Image 1: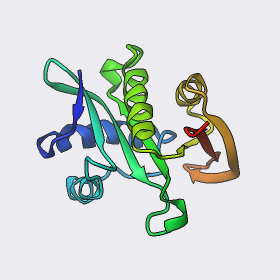
Image 2 (image 1 turned 90 degrees about the vertical axis):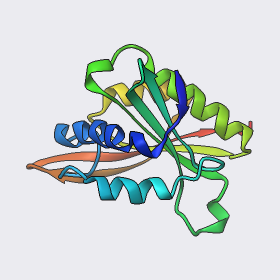
Image 3 (image 1 turned 135 degrees about the vertical axis):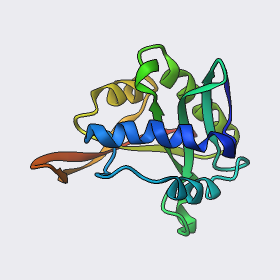
Length: 164
């Protein structure tokens, strides 16, 4: 079941995110983020315009997706939003990310956003496949932007037009 995230779920959201941080190639954070960071982040996600959706299995957060402002404060870009999504490693390969992305596309279309953006790293093949499944296209690449533990990765920008 998908619902809007609640403050009481931030510990689970943060735990899932930090799984990706520890992987070293799913996010550009190199150190786990603390719960204070997550609370501040959540405060920038009012549900009417930038919601955080959670996928629940038996009342447990199995995955989440956020719709965020893209380049906040730059008014000419206010019809563009960024999606980020993470699934608990114990719940992967069950279609959770697909369901969350369906929710994000529907929400963003209903809000009259024109473009969805996803920013990721080249080694994240499952996310690239998911984005391509939903009609996202690569719109930009910064070669070797990511540097962690002597590894370099390209920083990718994928986008999906919603106004066609």
